[in-house]
Length: 389
Ligand SMILES: Cc1cc2nc3c(=O)[nH]c(=O)nc-3n(C[C@H](O)[C@H](O)[C@H](O)COP(=O)(O)OP(=O)(O)OC[C@H]3O[C@@H](n4cnc5c(N)ncnc54)[C@H](O)[C@@H]3O)c2cc1C
Image (cartoon, rainbow, N blue to C red; front, top):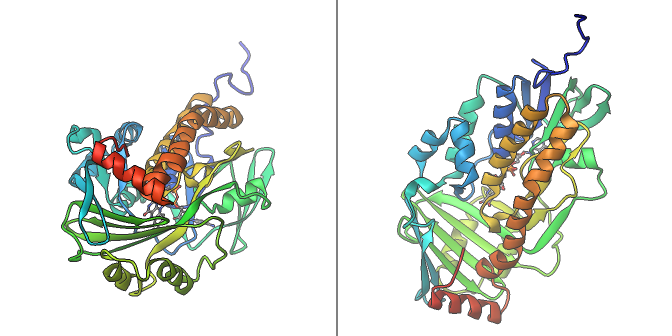
C-alpha cells in the first residue's frame, strides 16, 4: 500500500501550529483556552497593560453552563456565584413603583443560573490559560496579510510573525474586524443610547443583593448593591450618535451631568461618584451585525463579531459560547478552516439574532424607556406581574 502524502483524515489541527488571538477578555481568553486544548500554540495580544477590569456581573446560564463545565471551570464559577438579587423600580421620591424578584430567578434551582462578578470570571479564565499560552500586553495587530498557508501579521511595535489562524476577540470596536473586513464599514447597529457604569466599594446608597432602577423618559439610573461593591449605572437615550472623544473621560462625565443633573431619587449622590475619577466604562448602546464572522483565516468571536449590547445582559455568555462553538467546528473539520468557520457562523447565528432582536425591542423599552408611554407600559406590566426580563 502506497503511503499518501497527506492522510485523508488530517489531524484535527496542525499540531503545534501557531494561532493568534487579539484581545484578552472573555472571548479572547476562552478562545485561547480552546485553541490550546486543540493543540495549537497560542499567542494573545492585549492592547491594555493588563486585564481590563470592572463592569456589571455576568449572567451564567443555559449553554454557558455547559461550556464552562466542559472547560472544567464551573466549580470555580459556582464558588464565586453571587446571591440572588431583588429588583425594585423606584420613583423620584424613592417610593417603590414595582418589584421583580426574578433577577436572577431566585425561585429557580440555583444550579441553573448564576451571576458572577465580571472580574472573578476574568480571573478564572485567565488562570485556565496562564503559563500554557503566551500573553503579550500593550501589544496589538497593525497589519494582516492573508497568505496561502497562513496569515502574516505585523504588530504595532514593528515585529512580524505568521499564524495558521487569527481570532479577533477585541470587542465592539474590534481592530481585527477593521483590518480583516476593511475600514469603511464598522457594522454598528446603534440602539439609540449611551451607557455608563462605575464600580465602587460598598456604599450606603442601597442594601446588598438588591438592584434599584429609576427612570424618567429617556434617562435611567441604576444601582446594584452587593456585599463588597456597588455598581453605579446611568443610561440615556439619543436619537443619533453623539460625536465625543472615546478617550476623553472629562467629556464623558460632562455628558452624564448634562443628562442627569437636576433629577431626583438618589441621582445627586450617584453623581458624586461620577466626579471621583476616570475609572469607569462608557460607551454607546450598540450591537454588531455582520453578514459573516470570518474572512479567510481570520474569524471574530464575541463582541467583535456579534455584540449583543449591555441591554441583553449576555455579552460575556455569548463570548464564551462563541469560543466553544468555533473550537467545536474546528475540531470537526480539522484543517478545513473555511468549512469550520462557516459552520460556526451558520449554527450560532440564529441564537445571536434572537438575542439581538429581543434586546433592541423589549430590552430597550424595559430598561431605558424613551417616552411617557413606554414608561407607563412598563409600570403597567409591573403591576400586572407580566414583566419579563
Ligand atoms: C472594562 C470593561 C467593562 C465592561 N463592562 C460591561 C458592563 O458593565 N456591562 C456589559 O454588558 N458589558 C460590559 N463590557 C463588555 C463585555 O465585557 C462584553 O460584552 C463581553 O464580555 C464580550 O466580551 P469580549 O471579550 O467579546 O469583548 P470585551 O470584553 O469588550 O473585550 C475586548 C478586549 O479586547 C481588547 N482590545 C481592544 N482593542 C484591542 C486591540 N487593538 N488589540 C488588542 N486588544 C484589544 C480590550 O482591551 C479588551 O480586553 C465591558 C467591557 C470592558 C472591557
